[in-house]
Length: 261
Image 1 (cartoon, rainbow, N blue to C red):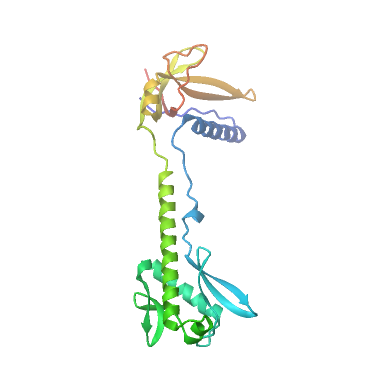
Image 2 (cartoon, rainbow, N blue to C red):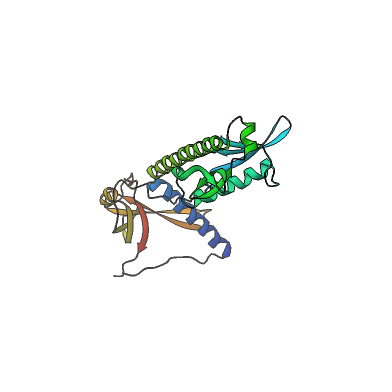
């Protein structure tokens, strides 16, 4: 057995037409055979977004920096501290939290404690945000209570975000395509649909139950604009093509061979 390629030298234009037609036939065959499809990954879907974001607000004419997790407000900063505006502080806090989350910190690790004499929200003994006395006074509470409220709110919001991400991942995994049965292939005779003559052999591929049904491959000759001959190969469930082709849907022709006598 040897592989052969049959082509006719019709010139550059005809070759281009043949290539285009062959690609079209192959594409239509892939659409109707039920073979596994090529799935292109959506890079934007794979991109990870930071869980914590910042929104700028104006309350009573004053700037406010709001920390959110999945668009849910977790805490807001209203005072200037160490020369940083509320919005600047909020951006620093968001960056710290996102870095901690990316580093594998668990929501339960977020706590309120005194660091360097000031009450703060911490993660792995690193300060995320400081509850300064003026901030607490404006909120009608104490720095300790403010820090505990912030820590609790941030921890619970990140926990909900973590659970939602896990559920989304599980749903995505459940939609991954898996074949219902193993795929198989085999060689069968190529038979002319018009003359019933055996012309060679063809390799067919597809679900095992479909491949078992294939007994031969029918060759159909057609023409493009009366001067380009095109051969189409279809897997059939009979040894000899009849008036009506018994095409095996789900199987595809993936290779051709000639037999030298």
